[in-house]
Amino acid sequence: MSAARRLQLLAWAQREGAWIVEDDYDSEYRYDSRPITALHGLDDHARVVYVGTFSKVMFPSLRLGYLIVPPDLVERFLAVRQAMDLCPSHAVQSTMAEFMREGHFARHIRRMRVLYASRRAALVAFVERELSGRVTLMGDPAGMHIALLAPACNDAAIAARALREGLLLSPLSASCSGPSPLRGFVLGFGNTSEARMEAAVKRLGKLVDEGSGVSGSR
Image (cartoon, rainbow, N blue to C red; front, side):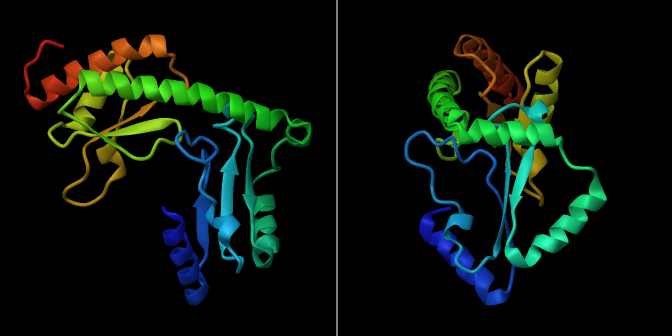
């Protein structure tokens, strides 16, 4: 959302007495411009519950996330949290806090942003070469995934076939509701080297051709 649209949403939340839950898990990774200020950073009326995690920017097995909660909700959130489980290890939390205080986390983010920008650029280049005219790239240059719109494909069937061949795709239609869902794929690049991408995208091109009834040389 643009900064202007974010301010409109915050004004609506204040006017209606509503809460906004902002899931901002990979906002650190934006490649063509500086990250847009989060809703929480623009919020002057404590209407935003800000949700984040270290699973993407560090590693999933850390199993450590966080909430920034408006003051009026702190006691209720604490009560629910204590009722759910015993919380993550204090040793893990303390270690992560020290890692951030000493500046290692900020350096890690800067280093990974360069790496992911390179991987994203490579994946986009392969997609544009191998799937030109059959898919449309969606979204801004940010995060650790790209989305491809492919309306002529049965994306769920192609994703199932790809999985049997060792290629992991997420069909867009699985995230849509209604009679006319978007069709296409979500591709992750965070854990895929550029050397492995070309063959994977070529394989995706063949699956898209076969799934849409288009013949081709790929």
